[in-house]
Amino acid sequence: MTRPMSEEREKLEPCPFCDRQMTLRPDGYYRHAFQRRGPLCVAEFVAVLAGDPVSAEKWNRRSTSSAEREMREAWQPIETAPKQKVVLLWALTDTETGNWLMATGYWMPGYGDDPGAWTWDGRRLKAYDTQPTHWQPLPEPPAAIEKAPKP
Image 1 (spheres, rainbow, N blue to C red):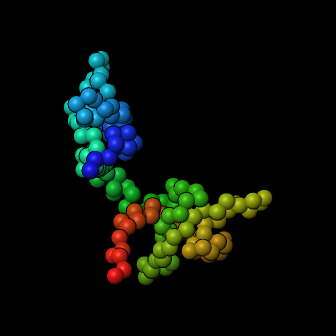
Image 2: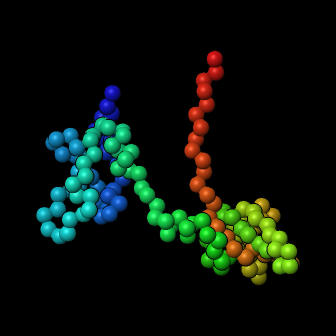
Image 3: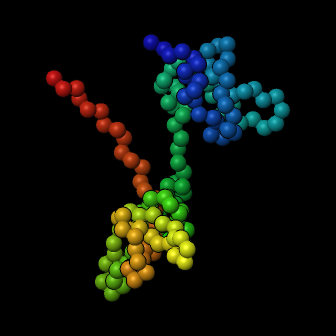
């Protein structure tokens, strides 16, 4: 069973190369809006069959470049961490042994004379606590697991 075309239209992402939306053509395929002037997009001749969830899923799939993946997975200096967003924090606790700690946390802004502080696993760090030195974005959550129906 195919879905109505209007439903499929809502599920198509814009082109990853030129950011143009796909347009439904009389032949039943979604294609780029025809461009008479200017450079062609590398995906200009890609077509997505209307009502076909496999075609839509393939069009909507986006690849992440290895540089982007490495940047996301690399530890970054704490000064570059986003404020008020939960991230992974890393702190060196002993330079002689190389012991370190890792936790989730975020920057909590201060008020009045209070400059603000990092939270470490839900606890606001004091000035005398070991402070995080690096951060990393949280990894993507795992895919949802469908539970089997109870007999």
